[in-house]
Image 1 (cartoon, helix red, strand yellow):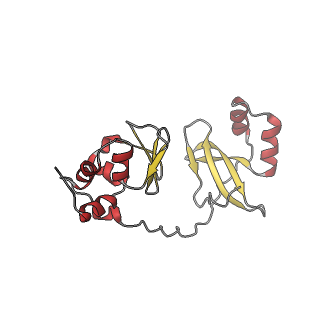
Image 2 (cartoon, one colour):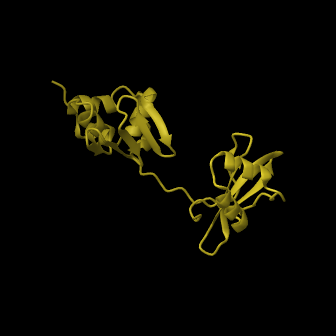
Image 3 (cartoon, rainbow, N blue to C red):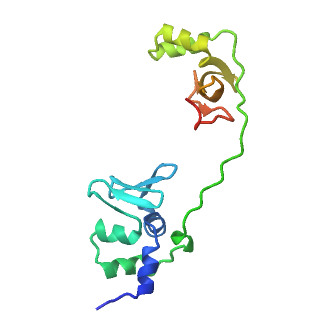
Length: 190
């Protein structure tokens, strides 16, 4: 009969599920956002911020050990062996993640507006936006036409409570361009 030591159990409990899958089953992982993953075999399993939750099974946990026992139904000793077994698990997996320092403040540099926004108006009307809505947005400055790499773009502007532009997004009229303007602050935009 197999057994595991307290040290092996501690080591296994310190391995998070994301690290375990990256090392042992990388084909299982599907990145769904900046810090969220799902798996192929369990579509409703979400891995985020060092935790995991399986919506369908209504169970969650922190470690790979919890996952192997609660989701895959593997016995405790076998699960510990799988986590710390023949595979090398990076040492960093058990360490808490430090918050990244915020990026330095960037100044929002708004693209230059064209005098006549005819292409943007036509483009948005083709997409079903009522002309009155387009006209109102053009007048209040939350929308205007500019050019990016010699192509016409719609520029959508987000402002703070005081009316100061904090965010701008460019959308190509004739291209697939979708890009935030340099210096945009998505946290403070309204």
